[in-house]
Amino acid sequence: MKKAIFICFFGVVALLVAGLFLVGLVKANQQNLRQGTKIRPLVIQNGLADVRGQIHVHSYRSHDSNGSLADIVKAAKSSGVHWVILTDHVSSSKFADLLYPVNMDNVLLAFGKENGHASGGYQLSVGPGGSGKRLSILGHLNKIKSRDWLAENWNGLEIVNFLDNAKEQNWWKLLLTLNPYEKLSYGIRSNFQLWQDLSEARNKPVPIVAGPDAHENINVLGLQLDPYDVLFRLVSTHVFLEADKNSGSVELTEEKILTAIKRGRTYIAFDYLADSEGFSFAAVNGGNGKEYDFLGFTGDTVVNPEALYVKVPYKDAVRKLVELRMFKDNRLIYADKGCCLESRTPAEPGFWRVEVWYRGHPWIISGQILVK
Ligand SMILES: [Zn+2]
Image (cartoon, rainbow, N blue to C red; front, side, top):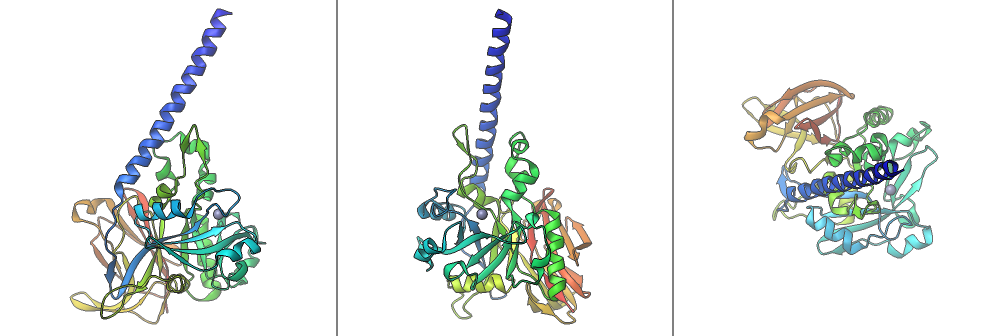
């Protein structure tokens, strides 16, 4: 009897110690992430400013989140995020009370909605009454059961969704790893094929975004596993906004951000790995000793360019850790580890996109350029 009590007691203590150890590990992970981000002026090149933001964020206006707008703005400020499109689960009547964009402490908040969709995926929308008139993105792609949705008028696809990733990885297994947040930061491969299929069906590039699907509502043993600021540091959607030709300044409005997304002027970055601002992917003429002539960027269809140009913003000291991967029609065409800061690849017809990997993890996922 005494032996059984001792074993029970020992088991409970061991579980408690293991639990505290895991909590400590997650806390250390969060601290590491928080140290990595720095806020600095926008990078502008070729007349385009790289403006980091978030789409697919939930607040107190959803039944499953208590996050205030102030919490979200504070998290955005601390992680270098300039705009946030909230996509709450709310009824149309409740939705109507916040249709207008709000600028809080220099962070632009736009108000949208998330709805279930007949395909099995979810619609992330911005527009009166959740109509999606201003923006309509298909999210949670790996939940899609039917392809009938291909014909619908989506403005883009959510290629990365953290909740889908967590389910694919299994929450509890994630918690038992040394780097749970790192393991969460990728795009499910089947999403890329759906993206390619939709692009081919339309014969033009399809815009992409990343969804942290942030609710700040998962708490284990008193530890918040999904704080807004941690998720905002893991992944974001970067939009390219046109800078004023004379002053070089950038006006941040909801209209400009939605237009840039719809035009395909986006890329996804797992920002915790390294600062991606300054990344560029373009169709060009020139190079090889001649000056580059930039013909088009992501979201564009370009006829007969000489080459595709990629600029990856890293310091020479980490060159060996950077790998450039060029995809045409979702097939890997070219990979170069330790590649140059700027690269030039001959352009053949097809949908081109770029992935940049860093330290063996996906870091940057570009939008598409269609070469004809
Ligand atoms: Zn959501």
